[in-house]
Length: 552
Image (cartoon, rainbow, N blue to C red; front, side, top):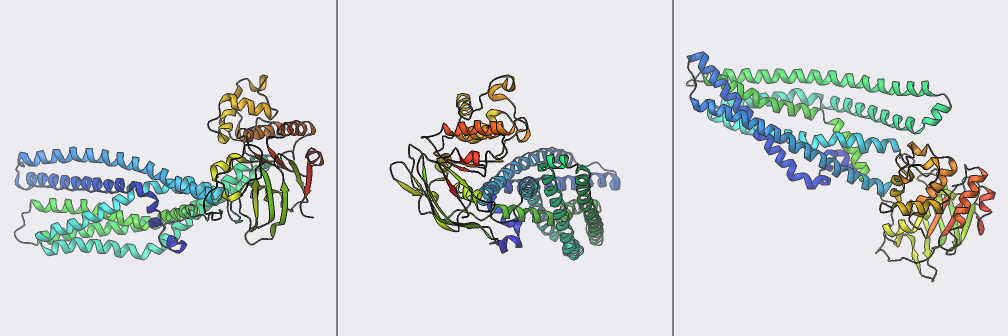
């Protein structure tokens, strides 16, 4: 599968746009009709002018009417072609992004060390936007120019085989001057794409590390790195532009030579009315223009191939979900117990992140998990949340009445409502309080949000929250203190009314007062939610019913 993708990734994406095939085909048809109208207009215009110059005669009214109709038809077709191609482009953009995000949801986070958020962002935004125009417009142009050229050669055969051969020879010449440079153009195109991707990755890294850059006074170094990578893009882009300009000049010479050849073939043919020769030349030139443009497009496909390959790799991310025969309906009314048996986990090519571990947590219990750095505390949290699949062992959930179910046998929607994770660095997004809370539960009302915030020990009162749930949080929750941020994320989790809540170092960066406020909120969950608290702080672990030590 991967080998065929790498061989021709542009074709590999076509099945993911199956719903737009008819629209793409219609765009090609409209493009062909539009070019036919242009060719007809060029022929009619040349004939009318040649008739006036060579014979001082005025063309019959029918020719003038035909020309006016061609002008109107071309205007309508041009508008319609732009309208449908833009519409299809947006739908293709949506189709590719949905397929891509489906791949991300299936394969992110991965245990591969090489996975990088900047690369994924560049793929989801830049690469997909580049491809939408290619599939919505360029493919139709290539198909249309191919059909027109074949039809044009066929139409010239009745005028004389030598005229048709002249046109066909021009096409062969276009291919001949283009083929030798395809490899070099592909290499330069790949270098441009790699250089641009490197800039995108660095930009994402710099933006995510803004506070560190400011804190350590690294602005000049960051600017220098970005400038260096930008210069690398500019350098290889100049080489590519010069190469493409040289190829364009060669193709223009081929078009000119073809027009001259057709002219000479027509002039030397007895019985051809001289008035029609300018029309023949104009029609040939108008016919060859999209063909030459199509050949030029083929030489510039490497950036699109590179983009298509990255999109396909994102769409094809390997699922980290084990095979399950059939989802199991399991929705206990009370808290959820957990039984972890002989679970192990290793990152690709690395040392074990979690050695064989077993533990049991009763429904409604509050258990603290501690251990030295590298013992696998965070890894265990992510295994409990089904973000990763253990290499061996089982994780089983139990209801208060004794029913049990394998973690991976639960349907995804019901699992996500039953089991929730709040990490030390849980994300807070730009927007209002309500916007952030709707990420957990889009159907949550204002009353639901206020109740969850109250339960988390963060009531929206006083001058700080004058706009209530419409108060803006700011980028990365910048307007929240550490304690407020922790309780805010806890409130978001409580909106789901989870039956199992996992807290991973949630109090790690809090002062004593903020820690106590959070622990008080957690203590109020007793009896309705099972809580697993992962922490290295003795004061946090002391609030748990019991404590489990990993790595011993």
